[in-house]
Image (cartoon, rainbow, N blue to C red; front, side):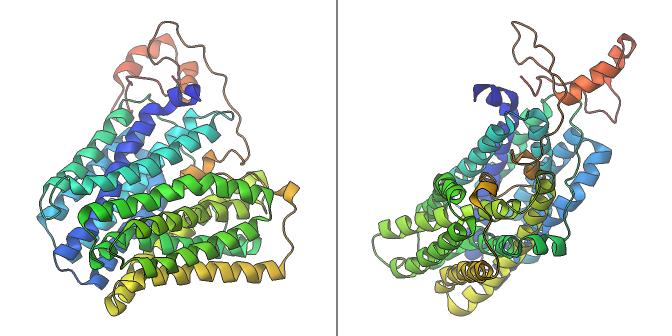
Amino acid sequence: MGAALSVCWPLLLGIGFLMLGNGLQGSLLGIRANLEGFPTAVTGFVMSGYYLGFLIGSIVAPKILATVGHVRVFAALASLASSSALLHAVIPDPYIWTVFRIVTGFSFAGLYIVSESWLNDAATNETRGRILSFYMFIVYGAMAAGQFLLTVSDPMGYNLFVIISVLVSLALIPTALSASPAPSIETPKKLGIRRLFAISPLGVVGMTVVGVAQGAFFSMAAVYGSMIGLTLPQISLFICVSIIGGAVLQMPIGRLSDRFDRRKVLTVVTLLSAAAATLVLFVEGMDSKIPFMVVVTLFGGLSMPLYSLCIAHTNDHLEPDEMVAASSGLILMNGMGAVAGPFLISLLMASYGAMAFFSFLTVAHLFIGIFAIVRMSMSEPTPLEDQNDFVAMPVRSGPIAATMNPEAEEWDEEPDLEPEPNTWFTGLSKASMSILEDSGDDDDEEAMHGDLTDDGPALWGRNG
């Protein structure tokens, strides 16, 4: 475990800063939009912009990386996301905010892809499962911690937007100082939607509806909290405990799905999620918020693992060399659902009030459960011995995260060079070694200075 951390801790640190800023920004904008008097439906439209931008970025960013390079793309997108955060405070207009949210989503998609491709390059066949676990822990932990930054300053002021900008800018430091040349990036091929649906209708439908539900939750949870009269600290706690619940129950639910028919586990979990969402409707008005927080924690713990369960269920029907392509396609389907979720739930909240928030989530999870029951009546289960091991995936990730799934087909590795003794952060990445092997002494000066298309020398190596 220590060896895996020593490989990638600078990158994980950068991801942590990104998620702190992203977690804070999503909740802050919901609260600020409510304080600015934006209609609820308009707020949902604004918040959908992030997922639209993220979807576009997931497709476009790899093409930009291929021509510009990782460090420069990361620097440009971090600057763009940082600037967008500040401009929200300067121009509190819903139409302008929608543009900023699209830009922010596009930027974060590219930032995730750069980070994930670096992590993938730093991993070996023995460590990639642990690195994926560290990645998921950082994503959930930083998202949860970011909620408490809401209480640092007045949401109507500029300070919180400045904090977001600083956090995103800080993410650039460890990434910019990582080893260079950066790894080559191969965008995972995606199976066509028809092909994916033919392989696993439940995986495709489930992943899309999970995207609708989770996009709706993360975008409008702060607005919902304001509508039911929660204080700012209570809103922070409300969103935080739902994320922590998802992180805590992820592996226990996953282990259950390894021991039993995964479709049955998925069905039970999504129906229990619907039950928890319904129960919230009965406890949200209580004077004591303890029952509310407990039920919300349970809802998050049951709902968030559905993302990984849908991927795992689909993988049960695939060969190892198909898993990356399928997972990448499922993640994009999830993104499409996430674009629709905030807008749909905001329309209902505008018409029926706060009760529509968890009512919508109840219906979404019931739909997955009913569809799963129908599918179980139409096809035989995968034999337990043929099921792949459950792999927990972070909810907010780019398509490159699928390549770190240890159940997918292993890649051929270049032999590692021996690290130099008595050196802090020694070792070279696979990409760096391939450059060194092809370079002679005559190229040393050029390698040190580089040209405008190189990412330049690094302060520390990614593999040590």
